[in-house]
Image (cartoon, rainbow, N blue to C red; front, side):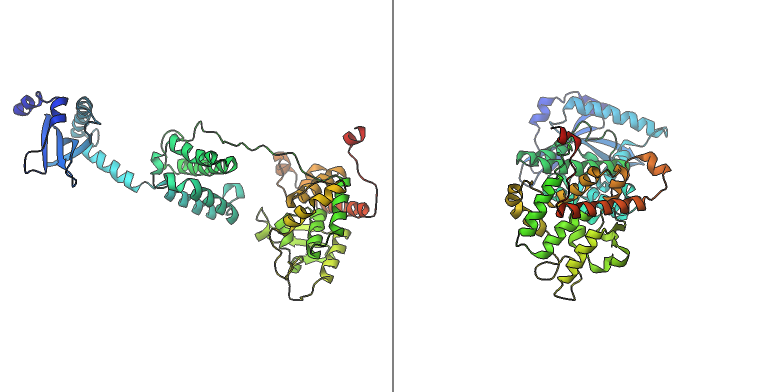
Amino acid sequence: MAQDKARATKVTDAKLAAAKLPDGKAEARILAAPGLYLHLRRRAGGEVAKHWQYRAQVAGVRRWLSLGAYPAVSLAKANADLLEHQKAHEAAKKGEADHPVIAARFARRANVEMPTVAQAFDDWIADKRLGSKRKDGRPVRERTITILTENFDADIRARIGDAKISKLTPEAIRACIDAPRKRGAPGAAAHVYRTLRGLVTFAIKRQLIDGADPMRGIDNPKPYRPAPVNAASDAELVALLRAVDESDMHEATKLAIEFQLLTGARPGEVRLAEWREFNLDRALWTIPASRVKTDREFRVHLSDAALVLLKRAKALRNDQKSTFVFPGAKGGTMDKMAIAHALRRLAERVEAKGGKRLRPHDLRRTFRTMLSRLGVQPHVAELCMNHQETETMRRVYDGHDYSGEVAAAWDAAGAHIKALRAGGALVIPMTARRA
């Protein structure tokens, strides 16, 4: 050991930098301090790699622990690390700590077993399919999972998918979010942010990430700011209905547009409506849970105007085997974009009649706005929309189902649209009247 110390005092950074392998040898070790060596090894390409090693006896067996590459780890840093390991070694002898070599072995094993970002994402998606707290324990919609997967595949997987989730850094996260921003897609950047936010939160809860939240201080590049509601007034609604009536579009498409205005249902719920869901004698449409955003069956009361429209739809059935209320031109499912295309083609004609451009979901907004004009109470109108009650205390204490009030609201909407078609008086908001 005294000889080792004498040799160690002669080691300097300059000598280490100039150190070479002896002729004919593939590797060698240079003693830098008692227990500290610089390991030289010839690589396949011929260059010589240099790494610091700490030598220790573990249960009577010599073990080597890597302390990093030279010169990235300097002689001074290697000596400092050596002292720390020697302290841990002495503590291990007293039973106060694990031997540093054993601790490093466990750390390496844990790092190997730690999932990558891609593996953690797969676990997160599998957990969502099992159930979500926000869904009262029910699985999330497959549409949501599709969106999350598309976001991950587009801007996250290739950049950090193979990285360990425990090593995720703010810089890596920002790179994923900034990628769509650089190509001029701020909306996609916001989706990437939300996907990463959910994944990181899941990883923290599962203790896959220790310490600080790597997304702390990173803001959504496009915070949600709802655009002004694009809903038709009564006058604009009359313009739309007249333009639809005068058009030569597919008759089932015309009926589907008006049926949305009568019920406030979502475009997909109307487009895929089947006759088996309707009980015309009870004036009831039961939308199955599989087509409802809340994953719960929803019942819509059918006003007299809605029943008349459905009778017209039934009279149009050329193929008695068709199960759809509003079939496509060929008798099958109406095309997903059929109503959107129809409204786009009608836009100029509607505007010429004093109306405004509307999209399929704007028909639903028009229905909700119309209920407000008719004096329907907000919480009743929201029930017609199948929206969750936002007032916590009402959810906790109010056990009334408001089925009668909701049916009356749908009846009022149907009667109002029927009156507009017959040239009845428009409901004009007080602010518009003063103007």
